[in-house]
Length: 115
Length: 113
Image (cartoon, rainbow over all chains, first blue to last red; front, side, top):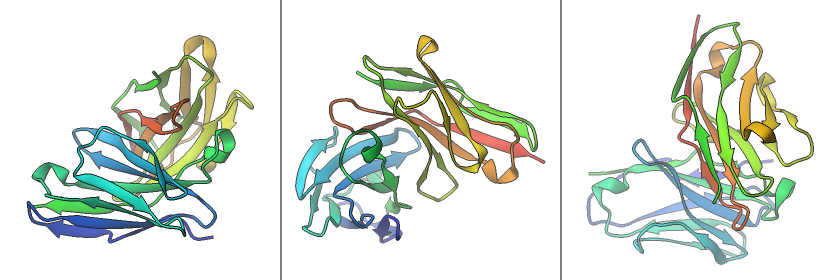
């Protein structure tokens, strides 16, 4: 079965622009989470969506937003890009339950460079 | 609040020698703990997970980890390192209230021939 798929894999944007990243979870998974990975801050949780509703949110400014569609696919959007937004953005999916059902599987990420 | 501390930022071993990557956790309850590996320019791959079923957890690629409550540790081991094990390893705890993952700072494993 296909894993978590993220598109695009690489992109370059200019400061002030906005960007949309897409994530298709593993079939049957209803929870999609987004993480930002940078050399300085490590891996940080952005938000989680479950059945089209944001269930958890990390400590990121409102420029970072997301949504989930009825087929569980998710998008995240970053508006008014700043140089510090350059990062690897990782999407992860899970069944959405707790314990063993909560095993989270990651995609390969979208590399965003802001110039 | 839960947290994990990876005690070494870098570990270097020779191929064929044992690997030990250390992780201590902090949690009020019996935690869900994971080890993930990230190869260069790749996403994260689950190596193994602990969810209180057994204290010794076997994962993929010959890795295993032992949950020791008395020491609040969840160290990752492998008897014999392979060149392909060179990667970044993350110890992770699942937040008991939100289920979100809390990552350690990572340990970069180098394997020399």
